[in-house]
Amino acid sequence: MKVTRRDFIKVTGLGAATIALSQLGIDLGPAKAYAKELKIKGAKETISICPFCSVCCHYIAHTRDGKVVSTEGDPGYPVSEGALCAKGATMNSMINSHHRIVKPMYRAPYSDHWEIKSWDWMLNQVARRIKETRDKNFKTTNESGQVVNRVENIFHLGSSQMSNEELALWHQALRAMGVVWMDHQARI
Ligand code: SF4
Image 1: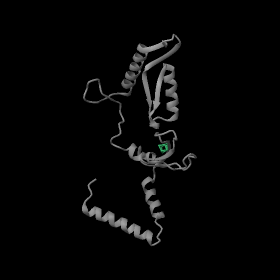
Image 2 (image 1 turned 60 degrees about the vertical axis):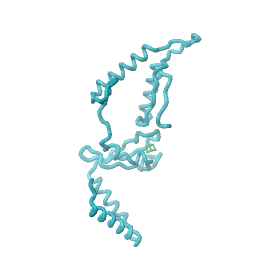
Image 3 (image 1 turned 135 degrees about the vertical axis):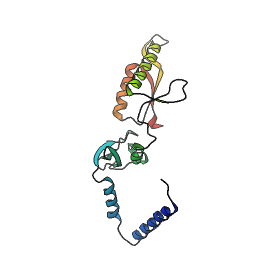
Image 4 (image 1 turned 90 degrees about the vertical axis):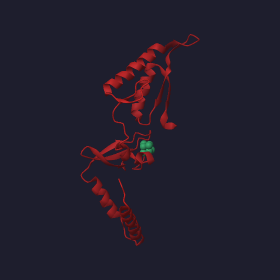
């Protein structure tokens, strides 16, 4: 958005007036609450979960016409009682960011550009490559002849974008495949 000199003076003038009113003892609380109400008026409220860490704070997503228009902490969530840290507090801008990638992107080996692929194509690729790597390198015994049934050349790094439940499921799948090397990015 382009801000002209006139716009800037208007906004800073309004800011100064607001400070002055509160210094005169005028309660701006109702006006602020009214402004907030206008923003979310008629919007549908849905409780969702911040995906950034294992605290899993709940937040309320306000949606109108299928678009998230505002997010705020859920006071009913007993762990954080409506509070959100800096990451959770920016949920609305993350959801609506034009940088957000919403389709599977693939860059072929030695290619210099990304291609949009379907979810089916991408999931098949991932599954095929994991299976090929696992089958080719699966070890049934170690150097001492002890049974180990493991694969040592796949490493998995968990993501703070995954919920506890997704990670628990994925951890079991990795163990079932024999993967022994894994860590989680959220604690870095
Ligand atoms: S990143 Fe912050 S807001 Fe999100 S779940 Fe963790 S503590 Fe809560």
